[in-house]
Amino acid sequence: EAQVTQNPRYLITVTGKKLTVTCSQNMNHEYMSWYRQDPGLGLRQIYYSMNVEVTDKGDVPEGYKVSRKEKRNFPLILESPSPNQTSLYFCASSPVGAGANVLTFGAGSRLTVL
Amino acid sequence: KQEVTQIPAALSVPEGENLVLNCSFTDSAIYNLQWFRQDPGKGLTSLLLIQSSQREQTSGRLNASLDKSSGRSTLYIAASQPGDSATYLCAVNRDDKIIFGKGTRLHILP
Image (cartoon, rainbow over all chains, first blue to last red; front, side, top):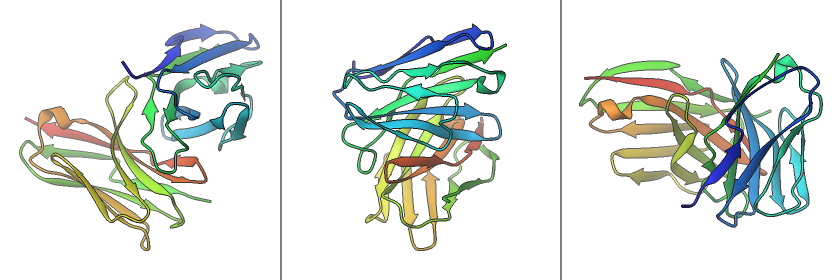
């Protein structure tokens, strides 16, 4: 089944403890991106990647890192999580850029930072 | 800076009625506009994608229109059903940066 898989789906952690949320797609998509969704603020783009070894900042990149060493994987790294990064995170992918193609979303990862 | 607005934030409609959801954006220089559906606690499902050169797209009971010059899009849902209850989001894309509206929470009354 064609899909975007995120792990973990739920995570509770403490301030300052580094964590990684993984994202993997099995559709050979070139474009991948991360979003966070917060009540009253909607979905906001954190980072995106046009292809392997190419990443760019979205609207809210502060406090996050990403890497794209393989086409299928696009992990989101929180080096020193803070409570304001408590949110619902989504990963998405599309075949060739987001300009002409439908985005496929993962099921989401709910992160709580205490 | 691109801003995407969806009004109303919430809408309740009796089953069987036709309805229109609205999306407006401030910068008309977009590549495309997508409509998504999000069920509570779930991810987003793409409903329709309209390229900047297109005026509308249809899928089943859904029809989305795009008027780039006025910065508006509408999602028309015909013969609404309780299963249509969800949050509907629109998103505009330019330079592969995607900006989402905050969504319209739709409730179809049985």
